[in-house]
Amino acid sequence: MKNLKKSCRIILLLLLTILSLNCSSSDESAEPLTPTNPNTNPNPSKITTYNADVKSIIDNQCISCHTIPLAEGAPFAMRNYAETINGVNRDLVLRVKSNGVNVMPPAGRLPQATIDIILDWEADGFKEK
Ligand code: HEC
Image (cartoon, rainbow, N blue to C red; front, side, top):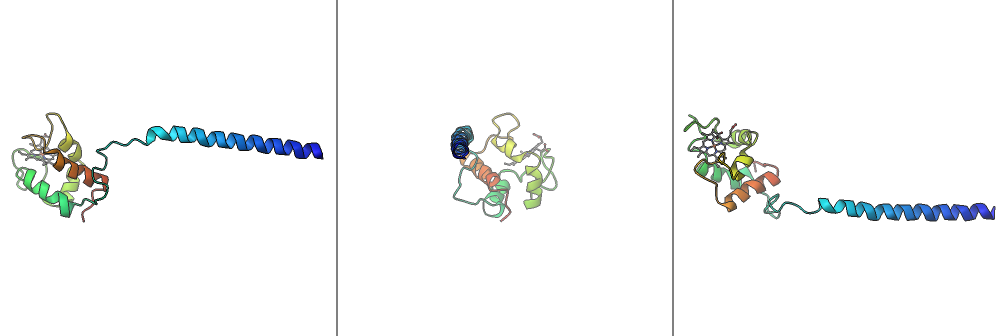
């Protein structure tokens, strides 16, 4: 009986040791996930919306071509929220932040502060309002 108690205690100790080892190793494996891309949410303290922040950018930078009737060969319009979400589904964010020849607008990359507003809108879930 005494021996049984003793081995129970040893098993318990072993289990606790394994558990604590497990915990510390899972902490380590979580570490590589921690660093985030600083561009993921440029302005975490602000909720960026289409109505308040993005519509004016589209109106100033995109609508000259992306309207109805379509101009300069643009393949779709962005006159309102629904049409702009259609643009999101056609890689609007990739086009705006592109460093390549497919950048939008075609005349050249927007100022980084403007691109950041679009990246923030993305991080906040492409909200309308
Ligand atoms: C001078 C005219 C012009 C302006 C301004 C312009 N675009 Fe475009 N856009 C085009 C043309 C032409 C295409 C088709 C050729 C291509 O895909 O590059 C296009 C294609 C796109 C596409 C890809 C559509 C698809 O399905 O392939 C997206 C997304 C886009 N534009 C977004 C934008 C955004 C966002 C802006 C403003 C920041 C903008 N464009 C400003 C002319 C323009």
